[in-house]
Length: 565
Image 1 (spheres, one colour):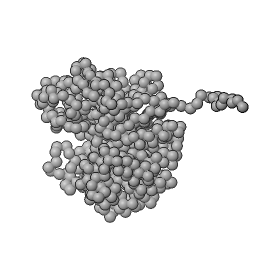
Image 2 (image 1 turned 30 degrees about the vertical axis):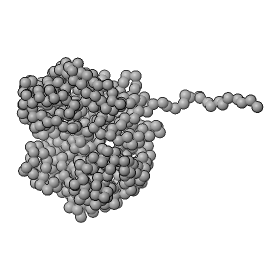
Image 3 (image 1 turned 180 degrees about the vertical axis):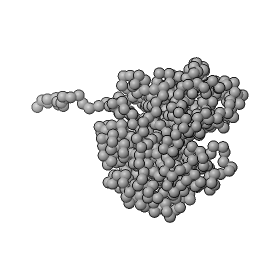
Image 4 (image 1 turned 135 degrees about the horizontal axis):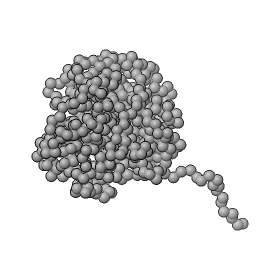
């Protein structure tokens, strides 16, 4: 049953579709119920949030195969019980054989798009960047977890070998990609049985992938990066015309990064730095919004949505100009986080009309196609992590005999030379991933994130404003209608009333009604009494599972009553 409608003091209203859940010993929120169950299984067995996260990610690679896998890339943001924050960057990298002129840009593409002639950067082996997920997941487990690979991978192997029921969401994703997937016999065999998309309720068994997972349990990441699995992958690439060579695998390393930090109305926002652009531009946008009484303007009002649109355009202009892999581009982090810079941008916002914005930073200045999880244990450890194979089903084929679906991360690079995100050998992709942890007085208040490509960080920014400015519950914040633009169309979800569409159009915004902006958000709120409240939204199969209860009180003994003869 839906919860009660949320009503803003300015009159806006919407209805949530899912219910939150609470726990004291742990909370796992992922975008699939079986992955959430795998995480909670680890917590119930005495593991910590990192054990739970890695179990959930391996399981997601089975039950949400269109979103993530061992051949993808991502960012893990971990807060340990001692209050320290660690970012593990396991993002994908451009193959050594690629460069700024590898692809030919499509002259008919819409402005800002990365489309190329023949879609060589989007589908098939030519679209694949070097993988980082397997190394990143196993590194997080070995450094901060308490369980073995065998322990955390058991649920994933179980679901791959025994099968699991296909959700309507998975079936719809197959339908969306069926034309590309039909070109590959391996992926068609699983997801297009008899030539049609696999139907909801069908049991999907991925036996080859189960065997790959078992081999990873035995040999760990070296099996891919320097061992037999990697050699098989490279041989396939050579036959299929892909760019990955052995050096791309043996030379891959994760990077430990210091998080960026910003403030908004007394809260501290902490998240990964570039090449993840999300938290940097979230803080930039919030710095601009801080000059307005957003709560008084009201959620979903024409004034509030107009401001959201303008700050989004400002952030995207600066992002395109100067945010990329810091090993290749000097990202002006300090300037983008500076409240004075935000004030200068704010001063030129016109509340009466939409504007076109250009970048005011430069290098050197001072997919809904991803998955995310948010996990906390009862000991104070938190994981907010976003991992992906980029587009739905990545490169849309399976490496023969392995069950592995490669990423198509080359589509994220700008195919034109001379840009901040142009291709360079060994360059890490610039993502919008935004696994953020929000503090109040140094203590965790919220942790959240979501999939959705370029729509990720705008959606996280809006959720934070929902929580902080509009006083929403965590369930309301993740489900509230969203907006998005990067300077062209202004997308509004259908939850906004017609009058808002009209008012924004009158201000010069080219408004478009869309079914959803970005994907399913996973969030946890940390209450002062130690309660963890988890929420997932209607845009995916997200499921929060809380752990309560506990072990027996010390000293308890079972004493059956004496019986009479």
